[in-house]
Image (cartoon, rainbow, N blue to C red):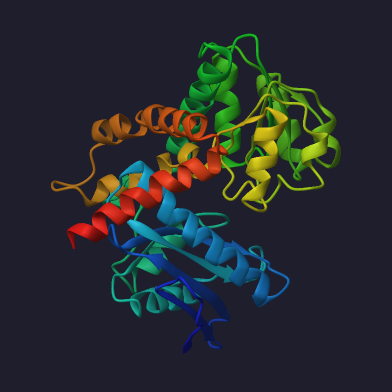
Length: 351
């Protein structure tokens, strides 16, 4: 196993691991541990290059710092990515090697489940490191974070609706959901329960067909989904979907979804503000998964009641962001960053 550090300005540690025996090629980024150890999920993706993976892992790690700060989890921000085809490279040996790589960080990074990673995969990681969170309840963890993330996103959508329309009632609203995986799919179900009209799309057409048949959603091809007129757009796939190319196509009043790094660049938040679109910053809206996992660290262990109480505070956090943005005349993503940075700076003053 060969572990080498990659200098990245503004990050506490970024490292690469190549393990020829298991086929592991992975990166871990720890952005900031001022508020606590860096907790962030493990993602398996078939990146075209290591540069693309490095871009992703560093953006995601920084996002986790801000997400945890606004959500008051007592944690810092980190992330790890494994490079490869999820259908081809998975093996117990690969995840055991990943555990050894995580262990090299000495507890400054704690991993959890993310894209293309299962509970079984995490158990293999746990064989070689203690720094794993979000395991199944039977193994002492808080369980699958996806239902909690989905619920928290719905709380965020209701908060945004209340701020924009004056009511949390979604019964007359048309919501377009891009990406109906574990989180997006559960969001669609919860929003349908609240009376919203739901249109879905996903690169996996079989998943769309399955959900439409089961729940009666409308659907649209993923490639042309932005042509659909809607009240609320919920990006729930990979990030960077709001950019120079897509913004002119938007017809919605609100953007609020579970995807990470929804904006390609910070200035795209300014453009949305100018267009009169209310953007609910992703890391405020989608924080419920990390909130739920963070409760595992409480004295006495995981308590779902405590977790749900903290998840419902997404309403207060998001309202604070919207109010700050209006008071300062700035984009909501910049307001969220200010709130996070203020909390991190306050913690530094106490150290």
